[in-house]
Length: 279
Length: 166
Image (cartoon, rainbow over all chains, first blue to last red; front, side, top):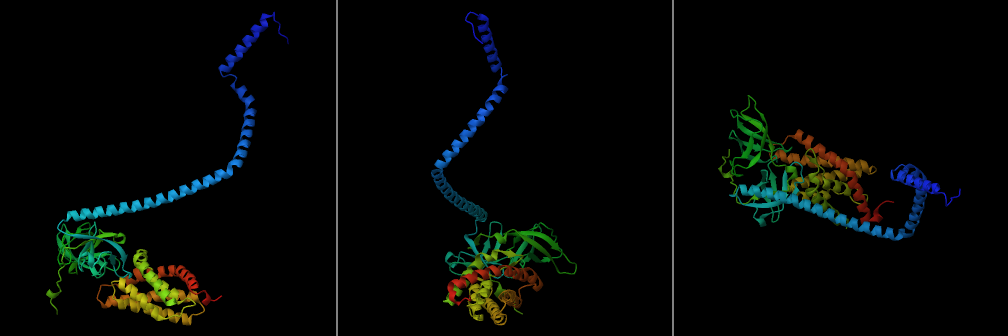
């Protein structure tokens, strides 16, 4: 086809055609056609780029791997350090919480003087319920001193060395604590057992008890100060033929997780042995 | 040399027993690492079994325990004596001797302790003690004796490799 310079219709037709195509393109009507036409081009371009990138990676890989390994080692080391710091901080938080609770306990009883001690061991015999603490006679600890935790009564010091002491827990079969039940204000004797269960004996038959009653030290017997929380009555056993009632007690202190305790250092236990009448 | 190493190992075991092992309980029972090491040590091929090995073990634990020293001395010496007898009589079956010594040694120590507690007039229910302390302790000891024996065997080879049979 040849364009004639003297034929204006051809020129107008071409201009109108171009304008029409432009309008169609601007209106988006030609996009599917362009997409179909350009798809092989894009595919080819992607293929070429991937190959080029692979070659570039292959050439640069040794330096990258070395750098990444170094970076990985640095990050691993930093991660380990941070993990150690987190564990140490968590331990400190736990310790601070414990000490704070113990401080609250001590503030609630300003009449007593306390020595804080950490539990560092347990009696190697499973028949006995003793713990070993890291304070001894050098720190003013004496035999017979009561030991408490933030929740309540723990036991009393049974044996002392210069830097450590052995504490007999109230759950020990040989332990006996004079107690008072609240709100009934009835006195009794709390005893431990080899299973770690606590029970109260010598409760008069006419006393009214129920599960949930609180158990405090009574101070009778002279071994412990009065009004320290011991536990809560979990069940009561009353038999018609028996002289006394018995009750089982749930201790407030979790003896399996005992970490820090307070020794009441200004309490002088009273030895009643000379007053007992020998048969 | 072996005696010194043995006493050092028993001392380490006693420390671990007081600080760590007593926290791992089954009902009220717990494993007895000192007893396990004592049994395993005495049953090593290169070691001469002797009941006197029970004396340092009992002495170390007696120091840490609220029980009188003589109770644990008697208990561990008895357990070591049982081990000595078993090694002499069941010399071909080491595993059998190991398990028998663990069961009988645990029973020996617990019986001596229970007898003392009965005599000292503490309120102890023997059946309850058997159910919640002795049997769980024996079970834990039987579980732990094999890994302890494997470690002690390696240690024994390290100390005197020439004494081990090929």
